[in-house]
Length: 462
Image (cartoon, rainbow, N blue to C red; front, side, top):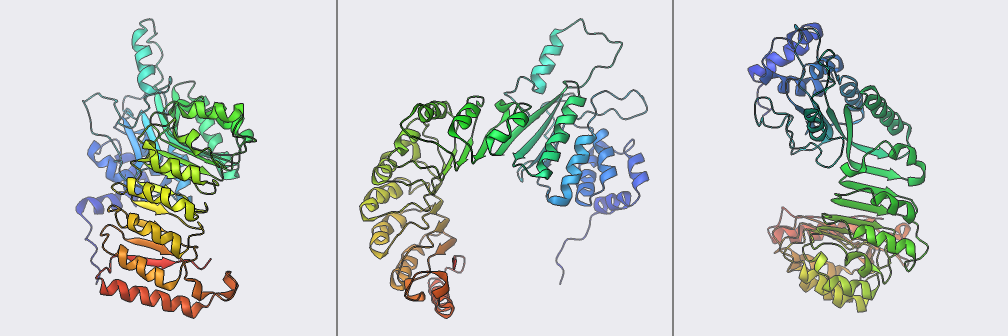
């Protein structure tokens, strides 16, 4: 039986209007402003490109956010249409509804509404607008208000902001999208500010021209892959408000040289950093140098393939900068017997805040993980645990499940295939699939007996 709610009168009226493109566009001159949001949502979901273009041109609010709307490959053409429909001069025809749109936000954010609440009748305030760029709408309007010599013979161009996430990955699709953004900025003759909040770069050396067109003061999430550390450091010097920094496969000749010291200097400026990811970034015996310059507000820490040593784990266990972690990823870093004690104290220190823990491919055995179990059982907020691809026996796996089922917040676990499921050598070709199924069946039975049907234990046969 279909339990979907029946359509409301507004839904029926919106769909009827969208079925006639010409009528829908004509109606934009007459419909109340309150109907624009549901009409925009329905037009976007139904991919009515021409109607969307007309809606943006007549938009009666100061801001327009994509928000929770899904943007997959087909919808990217709609984003292009929204960008193309931006206009920078007030309508000359008095019969035409004057547009008020000043900020177009093309980022996906489930928590963001299509429009911000009105502060006042004539307000252009938007809670998502840029507060750092010299080209932000508020700074431009402030400069214009100080100028009293502007001619009124010609209509002034409206300062606007286009907020986007940009990926400079070298693909044709992303190059074409960036070219569209660049052309629209040039067409605006300085009135459109391109504000990139989430910037992803693959190979910095090939993106210098594109980066010259971006104001890096706007960026709060930065991800860089496969680039020299010298170039990364130069890039960081132009940012001022990073919340998240992700570096992967960054080339650095020496952790004792000037290049690395300059990088640390830039890190020390990041007082708002909440998330740090250093993947395939060899930091053996140097993790302290990186973390000690950060604030104590770090919530997400990713350190896969970093070659962490005993001294690195020991520093983590004593480090105030990671005392409030919500996520810790140390995948692909061997945790040997001597590392267990500092790692135990690390888990103990973050037990009241840790929600996600990833310790996969860490060479954990029954003896080493047994040391960590008491600390794990104290992680009262733990929701996700990944510890697959470690050499654990069936007996230890059952013990771990038994001890972790009291953690009521823990819902998702990816466990290692027990060693008895393999043949003589530990690789995929020797895996006994029947034994793997038997393990899953046994764990499910234990979860049922513990009355934890809400907890999901799965594994990977890698």
